[in-house]
Image (cartoon, rainbow, N blue to C red; front, side, top):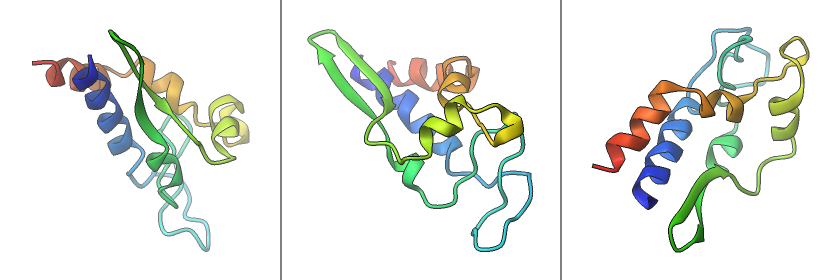
Length: 105
């Protein structure tokens, strides 16, 4: 279980380490994400907040812990207002599923 959660967390961290295909705003090191993309990395704070937690003897989860203030807006604002629902996307992302399953082998 631990390995699966760690694999999923690492895959999400990788996705949050990318440059987006949207506009490049002055002062940001990378281009921003476009709607439908994972949030583009600008500060590493969101990526670094992804991790795993042991919930019980047979229960381990991955998620966002001690997230930056803007994480809730990214997850819940509509894309037209800058929302990039990264956790919702991760739950349905076949690449993250594959990473979790591959880590269990």
